[in-house]
Length: 537
Image 1 (cartoon, rainbow, N blue to C red):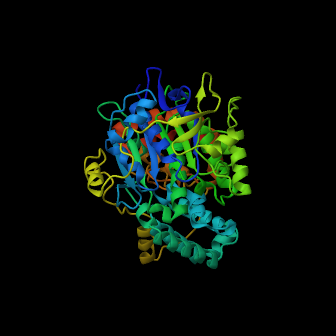
Image 2 (cartoon, rainbow, N blue to C red):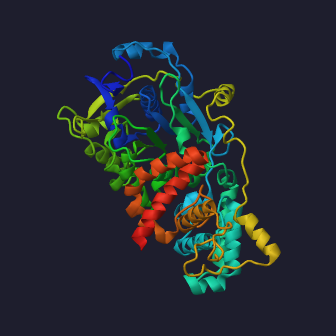
Image 3 (cartoon, rainbow, N blue to C red):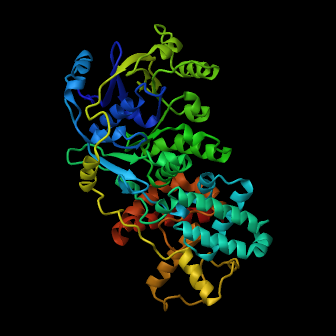
C-alpha cells in the first residue's frame, strides 16, 4: 500500500478500513484539532507527504521545528511494526523541501511591501483603533495621489510625517487628521520594527510561483516556514499568513474544481488568526477561505480547539481530523460537544466519549467522498510518516538551503527608490505638498501637455497610458507591490472573477516580453484596470 493509491487518494490512517483523503476534494479545506501532544503535527506531516507524492505543493508553518524532519528519511526501526499492523510495508523516504524564514535566519527570506500588505492588515498588525486606521488610510491615499511608492517601513514613516505636516489641509479634504494620532501610529511602527518588521517589509518581494513547483520525480515541494521565533510576535505571524492567503487569492488564476490542488496551505496555531479580530478582518478571512478553493488552493487550519475557528469559517472545512480533547473545564466540555456535533454521526460510535478516550496517534476522521459528502466519522490510527519525525540538525538545514531551487533569489535585500527617497529630494528642493490631482489628471502624474510626453513617439504614448492606468489603479508608477485605493476595492471585487482568467493570459504574454513578475503584474493590472474603469464610468 502506498501513500497515494491508483484512485488518487492519500492514505492517512486505518480504522476498520483504510481512511483516505481524496485528492479531488483536497481543495475543499480541512481542520486538524486536538490537545497538545496528541499527534496533530504527525497528522500534518502525513498529509503533507501524501500530497507531495501526488505532485501537490504544500506550504506549512513549522511552529516547534519538528516538521523540518520531512526533508530527511525516517527511522525504519521505529515504525515497521506499526506499519505492518496497518497492512503496509514501511519504507523510509525524504521529500523535496524549501525552507523559508521571515527573518532570513533558518531559510530563505520572505519579503513583502507596505503597499501589498495594505492598510487593513497593517492596522491589525499594529493594533490600531478605528480613528488611527482612518488616518492610516488617508496616508495611503496621499501616497496614491502623490505617486509615492510604499515599499518599506521608512517609506510609510515618511508619508506619515508628510500627513502630519499638512494635517490642516488634509482635514479639509478627508476629515479630521491630528498630529497626535499620527504620532501614535509612528510609535506603533517602532514596535513593529522591534519585532522584525524591517526585514519583512522590503524587496525583492516574494513571487508565489516559487511555492508551486515539482522536483524531477514529479513530487510537489513542501515549503516550510520557520516559525519558532516568529511565534514571539503572534500578530506578525497571523497577519503574514493572512496576507499570504490574500495574495494567493489575488494572483492565482481560476481553475474551477481540479483533479488535485495546486497548493495546500496548512495554518498551524490558527487561533492566533481569529483572536480579537475585528469584523472587517473576519469578513475578509471568510471571503478568502470561501473563494480560494476555485483557485486550486486548499486551506487546512491546525489548532487545539474547534471553537477557535468561527462558525462561518468552520462551515467551509470539509475534511476533518480530530485528535483527543480533555474535558477538565466547562469550556472544554463545550468544545468536546461542539467537535462531536461537527461530524457526520456514526451509530457505532459515541463520538463525544471517544474524543476524550483516544490515545496519542489516534484520531476521529471524516473526509469528503462520493459527490463531496462527508463520510461517517471513524476512529482511526494515523499512519506513520515516511520521513523523519523530529527536527533536522543545523548542518542538515544548511545543506538543504544550499541545494534549494530558489537559492540566491531572495537572499540579498534591495532598497529601491521609493517614498522616503522621493520625499527627501522634495524637502531638499522645498517642493513638498499634498495638493490633490487636477480633474482628469492621473494620481502621481504631473499635468500633461497636449503633445505626447516622449516627443510624440508611439512607444512613449503606450507606456504613458500603461503608467497612467497603473497610477489610477495602484497610485504609483511601479507595478510590483502596489494596491488599489480604498474606493476602488468595490469595483475590483466585482470584476475579479471576470478578469482573473484573462489577466492571467495577458500576464503570461507580457511576462515573456517584459520579463518575470513585473510583466505578469502589468498584464493583470491592465485588464483589471480597464474593466474596473468601465464599471466606474
